[in-house]
Image 1 (cartoon, rainbow, N blue to C red):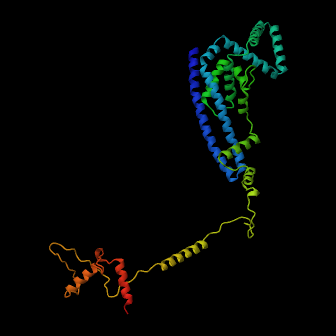
Image 2 (cartoon, rainbow, N blue to C red; image 1 turned 90 degrees about the vertical axis):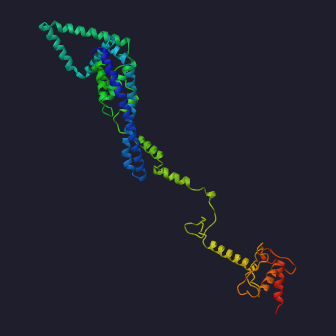
Image 3 (cartoon, rainbow, N blue to C red; image 1 turned 90 degrees about the horizontal axis):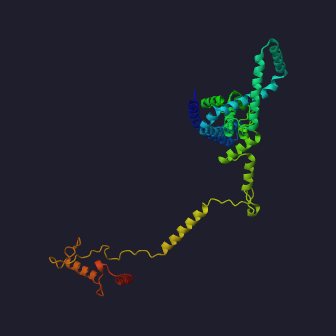
Length: 386
């Protein structure tokens, strides 16, 4: 397959992998928020042992989000330098890098083989020379020359392809076995990078045994299979309780109660009647004082009304009903008021009406109502009569 097609496959896979990593980060973050809310409810209910166990899931979710963020950054780097990676990997430098990885892999696996492998090789060399297999010696000389070239390359340059690209490939190889989610795109990326760096480099990077490239310490700590420590659990629970307004642990609740008590100089020193509420002024329900105040107010109003002048009754010999005569008109210049039962005494009615309109002093009021002086005089006359 030509290099151009290889680059197209790599770019397409990275463009699928990066959005997938972002989506997983959002899902894990939302799940972490739900778990934190549940933990706050457990702490408020006093179920501390259950909260300590379930908080490890929250810690693992946060670590997974952190790992995906770092892998996403390295994938973006590979996407930006995909063309550079393929030019180096499918060129002469890529060939030398793969040979160098093979030599390093042999050096690291040779001590594990033991002395038995060395004696077997010597026996093969002796048997080959005895039976005249001269091609064995020629192949060994060729491998030695390649090793010398690789050693010279390693002395001159400490990189395989590129410093940043080597670190990104190492991170992908190391994180694939320990990644929190199973991603098909990440597996395809690992296979493609293995074709460029070689199987030996991939094997070494999985165990972080590459000589010049190391996995970042932050990623090593995040991918470490180890339960969280007690201090980390305590700090997580404390932050969750603080975020959701839960009083935890019990020591903090006691401190809050101590801080809530009033200083002694602000406490009233007056002694009460005794009991539990001694020294504390407790307001009583003001039912009786209010009732007494209402009664006194009503009594005062009654006195004021009794002091007022009562209305006087109608005068003796007078009708309480007074009728004003009608006004003169053109058709009736002298109108008369007809009272029931006084049809025969028309002149008296007219004179009485005239007398009511005009007082002894010749003063008449509006509507036939006498003035105050006239009323006073009439009341005085009534008192003098026996």
